[in-house]
Image (tube, rainbow over the protein chains, first blue to last red):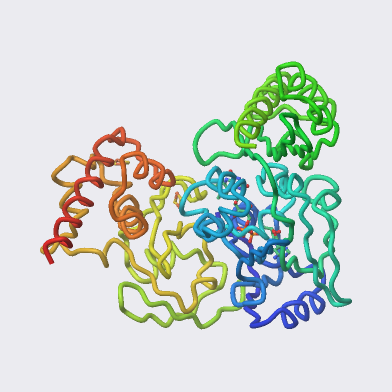
Length: 284
Length: 163
Ligand SMILES: Cc1cc2nc3c(=O)[nH]c(=O)nc-3n(C[C@H](O)[C@H](O)[C@H](O)COP(=O)(O)OP(=O)(O)OC[C@H]3O[C@@H](n4cnc5c(N)ncnc54)[C@H](O)[C@@H]3O)c2cc1C
Ligand code: FES
Ligand code: FES
């Protein structure tokens, strides 16, 4: 379980970090909390010549909540996210989801930026950020650009980010209405067998808008526009929920693995989404 | 062999300046280089928590940290919490309530429980179970571990109230 040798860098600001990435090209890789990367390096599934530790980049830290936008620095840990009361009031789905990630030790190290940049379909934050329609800010040698979470994931571990770009922050509008993050796992601390992120708004007794994203049911997170649309205008009764689940099942593509065969995963996905919708509706 | 680097760690209040490859895992540094063998290696794959230490006020798994990341950090291990002739309230409580059998998981359990009681000084049983979810035990069945932590919390709170 010893990774291959690398040279370690701990730059003091974003510009120097990008300088190191530019200098060493695809030999270099950034490390945030290391709780996805180090296990991969130990298995020698990732071989890295130059490891660039982001821990001193203060520009990537902190949470800002205003009436119109919420910004989370890439280096904010799951533990910091959970502890932030302003964030829990403005976007409670984040705390609900983060408490279902891993265990206390992992949440002390693992960062939100690392979770969304990693590209592992098992990570919980990417689907959540698609549900919230968040934007990721990427900074590289040619400047800064924003990419929608819904456009960021190409396939497992392949994202819109290029090797010399650093994800600096995540931004989204404060969500309105009811919410739920529902996750089925084999044991506490496990990745999802299936998870659903739901935000919905209510107006005059019916659903005014709904956003639904699913985790670990495809090689990327799946934002199911059709599953949300199926609820709009309904009173969130059994029929509407069934239609939403059917629409979601048309958008996912789970594979058989040690979390179960395809039919089982599709079944669990339906159960989890129905529960998430019911909980979000009860809070709307 | 990779290039070595100068690294400084403060462990249980003592400063150690070492020359190590950055890829060395913190748990190996502690156990093999510094002879601090309280933290154990159970799984080495970030799952069991036997290697738990306190770093800059956070519970972390020392098998999932490169020593280079810990350069400049303050680390506390079970050795820093109590001594055989001056046990910490948690250590006494684990002994009294049968919170261990083989003892393999115990240093990680107590080091994590110590941080948990800083986070939540007066936890409910459910909060103890959730807060200890990163530590596995193959012997006790957890009931007595939870009991030990709750009893230590009560003792520490009573002591604080008396002061
Ligand atoms: C036992 C265990 C259980 C877990 N369970 C879950 C779970 O249930 N749900 C879940 O979502 N996750 C889980 N994880 C993963 C954990 O949440 C990781 O911490 C997270 O996936 C990655 O965050 P990190 O900060 O540790 O990133 P790192 O491991 O440091 O990096 C991950 C990847 O992202 C890249 N990266 C990191 N930060 C940036 C950045 N700012 N810009 C560009 N690239 C970047 C790195 O180069 C690397 O490729 C678990 C991990 C363990 C060890
Ligand atoms: S040895 Fe580190 S978590 Fe098991
Ligand atoms: S006492 Fe034996 S593993 Fe916990």
